[in-house]
Length: 374
Image (cartoon, rainbow, N blue to C red; front, top):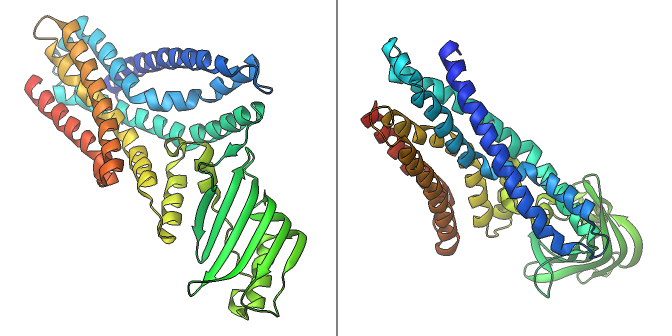
């Protein structure tokens, strides 16, 4: 699949792209570390903890800077081949422009797989660890927004969470169950701790309103699965005994301390299903999902976008000017992409179209430019 030409061109693009990526990530990390120094001294947040936090966010920095780095790396790598007349020699030897483009696209597939690997495996985990480390060192609780806490809907229950701790344990949790628009049960727990796929409720007060024969009162500890079975029996709903419905989706809790853009596509997809099943607004999560899908594809588009400027620099002077125009075009893509995503949230546009329209537009620009210069 990879011939000598593919490997030679691919090596030039990969080396320069990774070098540019390393430079951009280093600069971004330095500025991030300087910004974290303002927090040093609060709680147990020291310089070493700030450094650990910044190091853990490096995969996220690399993911978000990957497409611009590939554009710059491709312009520099292919531009070096053009300035050394190597592309001219290739064409003189009978190698068509289509074969050169094929070599670039094969390299783009490798880069797409690399950025997908970072975004789906390394970045989500490192971002979660980084945020937990920072919150713990600052001795902060991840307090949910609003004076009334965070409200979640799960089936016929409404769950209110006062505070989410860095380890995803919950404080001041209330559960209200409704049937036919009437409240049937109220539960309040001082603390809820995740235990595997289950939850342990501590210092629990249960009140039932629909069945005087049912259980109620104070319980020191009870697992959520056990409570559901007791609740089902008290309502004479034998069919539900043994059925475990999650108190709250763990993915929803992750999104409280970690931005949706930092989660994996699979986590985002599960959140979308959870929100849709409970008839909640999922547009922000859907937008983050489609942006996650479009990110690897944008790497390929950035590579194609660099080709017209490299081919044009072989025919006329001003290669530096053409490369500068290519860089500006890449920055313009980033700005348009972010603008459309914000407009999608504000005006109710389709998340999929908002994420993919900039990609399609710049892909068309790249294709037209390639046809005119080859």
